[in-house]
Length: 369
Image (cartoon, rainbow, N blue to C red):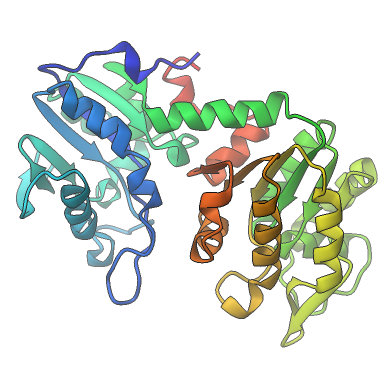
């Protein structure tokens, strides 16, 4: 069982909070989606209200190779200061603690610069861990999307200091446990996106527990090709064709693939209208729905038709528990005011998939799960 943030009073303590601030930014430099920042606010406010003596927020953005000015936390710091009502101006402090700068966003409240600017983070380096644990008393893990990574700020520090899960992480685990272990039937999974390597384990793991798995996106292309269909120049992972064919042979009656497609430049870029109707048929009457991955090419709004159509259909299924995970999927639904109509939005993409596939997540294990 996860150790909970409610088990601790933080008065007078120096507290590290590992957050998930890996947010998308528009070309004009503004924040496109604040959901991941907002998800941490309840936890941050609790620790502020407890009158902690100092708070350091740690997070990452992207996959920088060294220091990348396009992946700094300037905008995140300004947004946090605004929504928390902490200060009128954000102060940048150089060489803070581990030779990364930090942003002072309030009295004794700091946001460390993108932790992945320090290569020791992903190495789970003992010296980096020691720098944190020697300066702070308590650790709160509030970054479920990183739970499958054994990094210094996710696993390293939690093994050496008082550590608990934040409110959003607790909520993630509660909802995903129900999906993994005891989903209310009929239960339907919608699986899309491009990375079939990430999706095959979850399809295999849940096939015996769900009523139907609706597959779209590039994941469907690999399945279609594995059974001999000609997908032309569509995105396919050829090295996984054998595995995809095995899953179809074993669980084929549970898996529903597209029956028609939208094509562009000789490649499948979205599910077709008959597939949308077909998928809606299987969703009708569902009591539990889990969705990860867009059903069309995510970098072109012309090919969001299938994803948006199913999003609108799910918004009408008010008696069903509807859980959506994955940044791209949530982003599309959010752009069409559909995300808020779902039962639960998971901040975890790969972490949610690994959790549902029955894999052990290092950051959760370190917290006693």
